[in-house]
Length: 205
Length: 205
Image 1: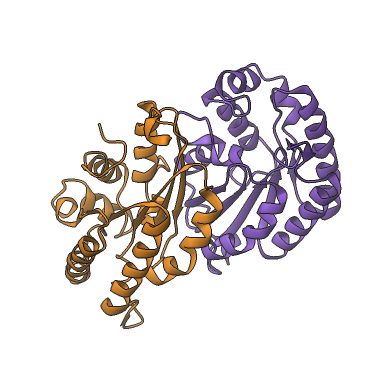
Image 2: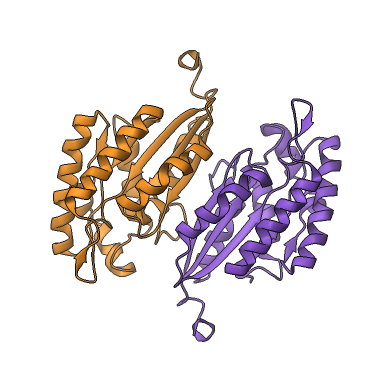
């Protein structure tokens, strides 16, 4: 019974599925928040394999199309199979004058992905971070709010990071200095800290 | 023309496709050789996004089934699209008394994967590392030799690491101390160094 095993003995495998913020774009250490939370768990004796499945420019539509196949290839039946999702910023981007994914479709994708994933795996969702663009941020804030409410009805733990990162001393500054989207080392460290300090996180201190 | 751009301006994206050694299993820093070569390139000013598509237990058959879809989702037409493959150890494992993938099939998978990949992307192949098991190693050594010869006929640069790592002061020691398969920090550092020092590597010093 895995519940009777120590955390060091359990074969934990996590797929982190999302966009460029999951991939860690802009981090000079090539870790992102994903690599940092994995390092932290391993340093504390957790037997953990992490798979970073963040893809730049991915919307909820892109993720809906690929997450099942990519996770199934990485999470065998005999492991403690965990999935963390994070997406939303790209849904709310304007491309050629049109929002890439409508709010209605984003919510439908969110519901479909999280409901299906929860039936096979332990699942967490991290909300979208802020951008250094106030119009874009209004849309991200609105989607984040809707995602959080929907997650409650789906019984999936949801970590809202938008407000904290918007006020963070590094996140938006690093994004502006970088490519007007992605933070650097300090921003990713901060986000990793938020995940690690979250009560729903599997390997909290 | 990308050839006229500086390396800092080119949007390089690499998919590293392979097995647990690509994933970095056993590395306390959760980087593996893949994370280390990415860090090194970024530290030297290369604009690089790296996708780690190593999966534990994957054979050439598993990789043949997934690499195209996973790479296509990550390598848009407007980037400098690069793919590094590394597999072979799991093909030569004995499972329930039978070699998981026959040499004949391994070579057919190798040829099919590298030929197809080379038609769309710049491609490199890193050979399989040694294991702390002499019978298994005889099969890995033989497959490595066959892979190297086939790579020459396919005109794909192939880095044979088997002999160097077999004599490395850390690789097999760390593997034995770890899980009888995967090295730790020093082994992965050494393999990263071999890739970075290879004349075919895109971001060599």
